[in-house]
Length: 285
Image (cartoon, rainbow, N blue to C red):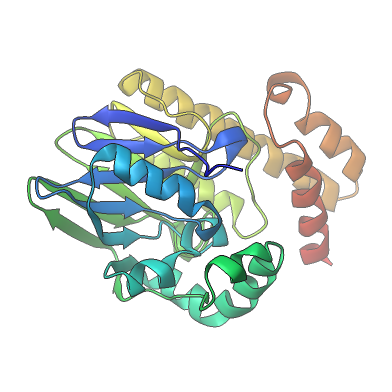
């Protein structure tokens, strides 16, 4: 079996999105004039795609790896890239979450892919080398990437939520604060806080937004706003239904059926809805 090829979408001359197949995690690449790169998120299970994407973008090395948050599909290649000379960066919340829960969650997730230990014999969870409380700008020759902490009250989608902005090009890498066309993972977050984070993003103007999962929005500021409003509506609707479920006015089956129909009927990863509901009920008890 050949190595997996990356679906690379060029957003600007030196800006690329690696779009995951069937709703898998999206990654970002910003290339400097010296061919070094800022890599936004990396999943060790998809190193073939990442290597292919870096080659297609003309990048000779990763200078900085940014974690938009702590989840395995965004942070599991930290140790790999640190060992290869990259500086791994994220929010203080991301660092704390990886410190407290990272080893156990890494072992659980890596254990589901036993082939990883053959390819990466020294594989382990890697934490951040550089953290920031609110904002940090990364400089490459010919490129600048502004990082912002974006978890409202310390937890939105997750504890470590960060966004990456290219101000000159008006491009936003939103991490998992935004999903497009796929049901989100809500089990690690706080939905009301998440909605507030999206409200703040709606005050901004971007021509392109790369979600954590799903298709990139390249249709200008109006399309950017529509993507955020659509996803905010989903979160508001789901939270309302969960509230009714907790009060005994709906059953889990009612909520699941509703979130898979109507405006949401075409969304992918439908199995995530049941998982989110089950986790909510577990936490509520």
